[in-house]
Amino acid sequence: MAASKGTNTYNRQNWEDSDFPILCQTCLGDNPYIRMTKEKYGKECKICTRPFTIFRWCPGAKMRFKKTEVCQTCAKLKNVCQTCMLDLEYGLPVQVRDHALKIADSLPTSAVNREYFLQNVDSALAESGEHGPGGALGKLPSHKSELLAKLARTTPYYKRNRPHICSFWVKGECKRGEECPYRHDKPTDPDDPLADQNIKDRYYGVNDPVADKLLNRAKALPHIDPPEDKSITTLYVGGLDEAITEQDIRNAFYQYGEIRSINTVPKQGCAFVQFTKRTSAEMAAEKSFNKLIIRGAKATIRWGKSQGKPITGPAAPAPDAAADMGTMSLPTSLPPPPTESSRNYFGLAGGPSGLGPMGFLGLPPSLPQAPAGAIPYPSQDPSRMGAAQQQF
Image (cartoon, rainbow, N blue to C red):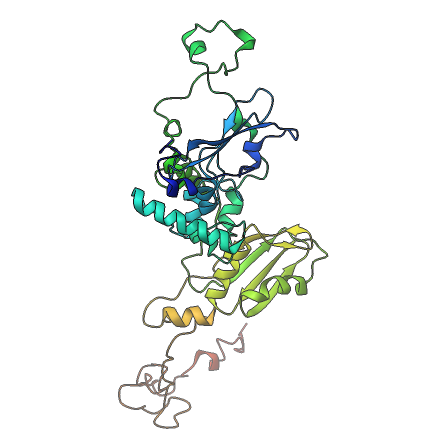
């Protein structure tokens, strides 16, 4: 204990006395008829160092005995299990949960400030009468996150309750055999980061090797990246049933922005959805990737491909204009129309200065003059046309 029961009456009033622990389903075990031993003020909390009630139980057959490690005030402050220090809702480390929800809950580290802070937390929880989490997590309107839903376990992980490895068996000196309560298995590599875990690091969400492993796994999850061509605003929707109509696809995508057109290909089971703005297409791709279900069929979302090379040079559209105009890539300015200074329809007379007789066609300024008696055009020569009489 941190202090004797009779030395300080004020501190003794803050000692915790509870009837049942705050546990996750994994630590509680699969046995519905579990038995627990309760010891009032049996040990001090490993976070706030205040004495609290200790619970000890066996979660199942061939499992090791487990006990509570932190008090209920510290557990409610972080919404974690009193034994494994994992989040009660998702079963993930605190560091992963805070990273996904983008919260920073800094607790005081000194003894005096920590005691004052926890007293205020106890008063706030007692006045509210709620059993929900406290601290920065309790102030959030919603604890839902797509990243947490992907990383969370859907079933309890009872393998975590296995006994520890028998050190005598590793040395080859264990003589208990099957009656040994410890596990006869090969130990993990000492250089493995998961072999060095700390309760305080797990609780405060810093330097947690399990959290680092899960965050690296989250980075490797499949995701969809927008193409570099800003003129592409078309999404490919595959895996559709033949009974799915254009209206069903429109109902699934209209919430992300204005839709320009929807082309369905029932034989191929796909459709092409074109938005008017690039931002709407990016939002639709991000929100519906690996999550869109239309009439019971899970749809596959991909970006459409460019139909041609983008225009480069002075006639290329501005980036903002191309993003707003969608796939329309019109030049910003058109060349001026050709003008003629005179009505020279046949190009027989000289045109304006700098131009040929045909004006903007750029023909030579004058045609060569044919000699006298010669036919100017081959098509007017009777011998060339097959009209000449042959002499026998």
